[in-house]
Amino acid sequence: MNRLLLISVFLLLSQRLAAQNVILIYADDLGYAELGSYGQKKIKTPHLDQLAAQGLRLTQFYTGTPVCAPSRANLMTGLHAGHAQIRDNYGLLPYQENVNEPGSFPLKAGTATLGSLFKTAGYATAAIGKWGLGNHDNSGDPQKLGFDYFYGYYDQRQAHNYYPTHLWENGKWDTLRNHPMEVHPKDKTVSESGAYRGKDYAIDKMTEKAVRFIQSNKDRPFFLYFPITLPHGVLQEPTSGIDAYVKLFNEKPSGKDPITPYPKASYAAMVSYMDQQVGVIQNVLKKLRLDQNTIVIFTSDNGTAANVDRDFFNSTGGLRGVKQDVYEGGIREPFIIKWPGKIAQGKTSDYPVVTYDLMATFADLLQVKAPKNDGISVLDLFKGSLPVAKRGFLYWEYPSKGGQLAIRIGNLKGVKTNIQKNKAAAWQIYDLSKDPGESNDIASSHPELPHAFDAIVKKEHTPPLRPEWDIFKSKKESTEN
Image (cartoon, rainbow, N blue to C red):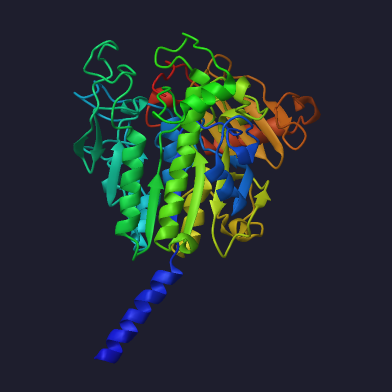
């Protein structure tokens, strides 16, 4: 009996040591060049820079759609924008923070997600941060889609406030020590910073829950999806960090932003605070001796937002476009992966990878069958060699800003814009190996490519679940970003 017990313990320990924990940190609206390891000169990101130095940095990694909710759907389901259930932001109505938060258009019941993939493989699973793919009372509830635990924002409109009155934990309201954003700035019941400040910064609460999840599952394999909301939108920096940037930038009060007098310093402080949360996660892994057995991945949902002073920060690194554009600045993202024992330190790759590749890649890691998806496994790339599967093309479509398409084949990328006004709009063609800023249209040199691109669109574009998400038809522009 004792011998059998010892054998069982040995097998369990062997399984635990063989399994790789996975932490996927997903930033919000982070520009391609807003990390030091990607060329940023003004914002300090030491923890992410260290992560890059310890692992692999991809220079041509792409999100699936240039805006929030659909990019998360591409990531979670492994489907590109022509097949995805969600193709633009769409908040369910009626919405009123603190009264009714119905969430965004939900994923269908039974949808295969990264959560369900890991859960089927025996992993503990958690989603902590901004979900944006449904609510706790409908089919898009993350706990119905493979995640054991959820904490954060279901409704991405609520995520526009970093000092909300509450966050959500497994479908229940978790009260925070903050006043509603509508309170007048001079009301004495709010903090000295005004109505847009409070005592509980949402990021701190989410990091606290992420740490607790890691600690609670240190003895079994786990998958933590951490879609942190920084540095998205509203410039509500934490109480620490801004003063140093105000001094560094010699920034004077602008009066242009109703929330902060120092928009440049506030934004830099938010990016740096995001970096600090990565440091917290890294330290916890090291303290629990899990750092050598945990894959840590960092990337973002889409490019920098239009309200950021991207010229001052060089946010796109010279790439064309921003959030909501299918040009490189809207879809090319930082991607860092640390995998001790598998990835040599300080490596860089320019092999094109996209978020919807991660479904096939994680299935390969777990040695399980992947659900139907549009990606290829890049597990071999992470280990130091080129993927076995050959990349055919990368595909994007986005219905807002007039309807947009983009296709990449090799180094050549086709872009088509304003489709809803002009269905016969010409393809712009760029050679990204020579022109990453997409400034030189070489369509006249490749008369054969528009036909190839059109054939791909005809094959890959399927009718969306909502008519206003059809890239070929006019629609009301999305405002819920």
